[in-house]
Length: 334
Image (cartoon, rainbow, N blue to C red; front, top):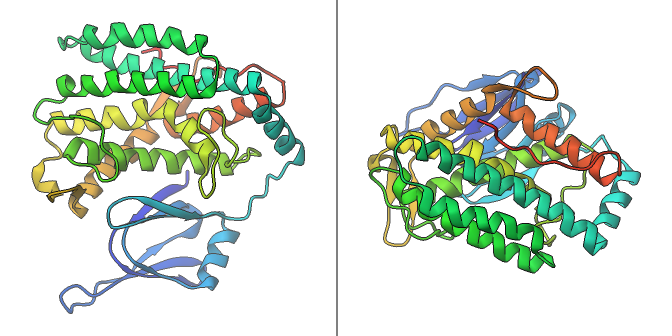
């Protein structure tokens, strides 16, 4: 299986024969040994430091179907280099556009996505409720709001329901996480450690969803729950809503409660919190490990990784859009 690689240090990425060579910038005037990455084993590169590369390198990456995702110093996702899309389908593009333009069908699909996301958020709270954390004050209103999803008359009201569900869900974090306060959700910039981890993890989930979408015939800029806009792959936002509770939030709870991540792993400023490189490496390793964990798929009757589940979700969306099979979002059952 191909793997994701993360480049935290600044340096130069180049082609060396038929593999990749990453030469980190000198540290304290000392040269650092280059690292070689067999291109056949690379699925995506996540770049957090300054990267020096040329068009020849990107041509090489494109031929080997390697995507590159870029993040700025403050861990904000800034863009991606995506290899040429080979699974082009005019039929899919037309069908996806027609579904978006049909208010009834768009609302129905958006409701299904949000229902899946709400279900997975509730599963997280129920998990901690069984471990003597009193989650009922959050679970009860969230279940009521989950019912409201199906009574929404338009996308705007549906997004309002989504916001209320998330508010209760994030309020519960204050009880789940032992030594850190969640407070209100702050994104730009994140104002405490928990918000910083949520932003960083969500960006990883978003990038992984985009990567899976790009491997299918789906058009990533046409979404249903989130409003399509300029310069963003909004279908990734729809898809990541379903998987964030499973892939990101569970990892955050575990790492903070087991004190794998502590205050020393973060830079605390007056108006933002940023993870240090050592913290990023620990968090990225935990998310990657989570992606490779497997479950016994109920329909396929075989073990599949969480990472592969995202791609299966893309296939289900395709079938729904083409009118082959009604979309049912992935819902945790454990």
